[in-house]
Length: 253
Image 1 (cartoon, helix red, strand yellow):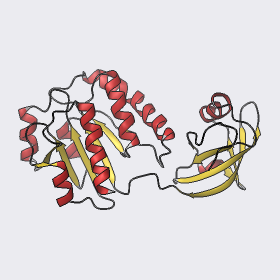
Image 2: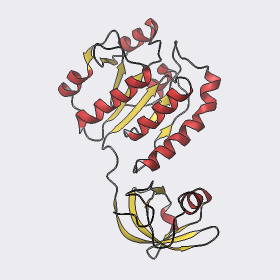
Image 3: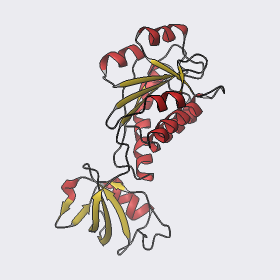
Image 4: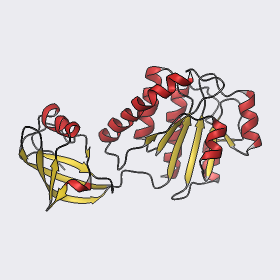
């Protein structure tokens, strides 16, 4: 769809509630969406925008009315969004410092994860109190990245966990730990011999820059957690996250 008057082929889509729909008209009155569309993008009557609701229904709309604090848009076309994975992919990751962690959160969102579990590991770069304070910031990054890449849903940044606590609290169909020096399989070989199924719930665990401790390796063995390698190169943690998730999505697709 060409977006009229915005000078670009696409714009971020906006998350709305289906409660805002009536007689093929969507009323946008929440402050964040209104300010972004009307003030930041300076959209005008007759221009098109993309909306998506909590049911993952995408709406191609045309702006019909703009007031000082709301706007009304007419639905031109609606359809179920396909911009999501049809299996559940979760990342459990030992947070890094500042910009590197923001990059991980953003790229994991773009690559389709359903959620990120910050985990406190033996070699974690941040204190627990610092991680807990940053979770709301990481959730906001997820929200903005979801808009930018037109995701059908917004992933969740969960509370801080220890690996043992996460495994006991949450149920996954498959748990994979990425280890740089000792692994059961190379990721490519493993995924081709053990393909992912539709609707499968998968957890990928990635450690800090210092890697997992010997105690954490022992935990993986004792709990039959498959360990995977991305190859012979040693990757920085943020590179490992992007490479691992990208490979999983690629092999599935």
